[in-house]
Amino acid sequence: MLITRASEYAILSLIVLSKADSPVDSETLSHQLSIPKSFLAKILQALAKNEILNSYKGVNGGFTLALAPSDINMLKVMTSVEGKAPAVFDCAPSTKDCPSNQAQICSIWPFLHKLQGKIDLFLAELTLADILED
Image (cartoon, rainbow, N blue to C red):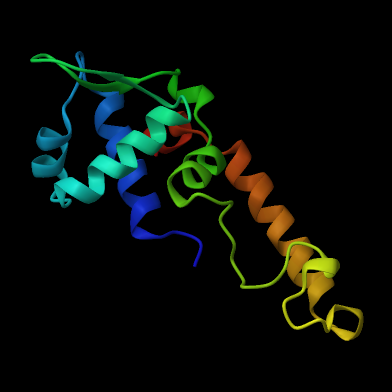
């Protein structure tokens, strides 16, 4: 599945944070977006670890964007929260990694690989700024 709940929640959080004038804490985001706080906290930490968000501790702590919206691409966001690149199909990224060891006779792998490449390129070019414009 390409867009999981984690990716969806990450993008929704980034939209809210892009409009905030000061750090927003995970509890506020959780209430505002109706996302379970513990799940959202993991997502926000993953985004901070991958330098998409800044994390501030303390009474006035919370999260802010670490980059301009035009510098935050959706491939990096999704890879950050999923722990791996998003995949449309449960197919190996290369013929040598085929879980069924049937890559040499698979007639659809080249098509799926090409499609995945186009999706990866689209996500790499799609920025938070693009989403905010829509």
